[in-house]
Amino acid sequence: MEKVRLGIIGIGAQGGTYAGFISEGKVKNTVIGAICDIDPEKKAVCAEKYPDVPFYDNYIDMLESGDVDAVVTTVPHYFHPEMGMEALKRGIHALVEKPAGVYTKQVKELNEFAASKPELTFGIFFNQRTNPLYQKLKELIDNGEIGEIRRTNWLITTWWRPQGYYDQGSWRATWEGEGGGVLVNQAPHQLDLFQWICGMPKTVTSNVKYGYRRDIAVEDEVTAMFEYENGASGVFVTCTHDVLGTDRFEILGEKGKIVVDDSKKITIKRLHTPELEMSKSMDMSDVMRLFSGGEQTDIYTEEVLEFESVWGEQHINVIENFSANILDGTPLIAPGSDGIYGVTLANAIHLSSWLDKEVEIPFDEELYLAELNKRIEEEKKQSN
Image (cartoon, rainbow, N blue to C red):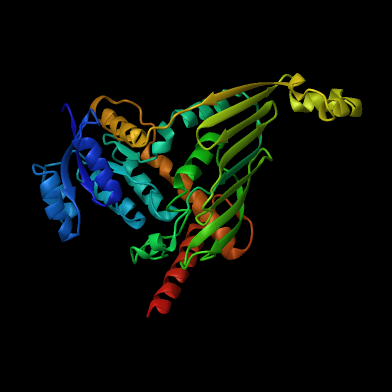
């Protein structure tokens, strides 16, 4: 096999983007094997755009056609685990879109099934992991550049969505159709990066607002506080009603601080002496000297790294990496099994809000599912 024949399940905005990249030759080791969509109008569109590509209206038929070596699931979140498992059952490699599912119980089922098929490639579309900025940030933290983490804060409110965005599809921003709001639609990449770089917390406490500034049932504003095993704390804030938007990720360590602004610039401040040692050796005269006209740069060095982000390049990199793993065993940047972590964080944030208390990780998955189903039933009653 020289190139992977990728089947695209769902040819909407995201699936169409991937099809465009591949058909334009931007993904060097991949071709479109087939396209599947349940919308009959998409067939004529695809026949014009991709005349030599088979089209299916049933993804099982596509999986069994012999036309594809692998698939990507660009469909509503609930279907990712099911479609991933059906592909793997038939010896087809699976690349699932984010999030890996709506709730941890279904994602664990997918992960366990994938683990039983080690000969097949199982990936997840965490394209931000290919972003050179976040790769560098992870390298800095893993290498102990600022020592043990004490506090993390990510304010990511660059997801402004007007009411018309939510009104364009009946499944969107519903518990039954999407399984949540900003946490499962816009912010899964940041939840993944948060844990990928800083680790998973042990507890979550949240303040979540549902339909706060938009006429929707699900969350459009989130403030979550994390606590880690070492006593460090974290705060994650996101929403979809801030038209001005802020993207600022701050990590404080015992030996310095790293700040990421707008996902384009990393500022690293490295202390000459770890903070605890400074606390033991300095007195108030030193404080006055530092903070009343003195040079704080006496205590640290500063490095600024700037990055350019080319739209689409990260998505291309994920597909190329996935196909390379199939072709020659190149390690996956985003193994499919990693999808559980972001879903765990999103579920814990929801559950803390629903129960109005701190939630430990791991939490009661059956309780989460019961609470989710309550909201689905309430939604159905209101729509009747």
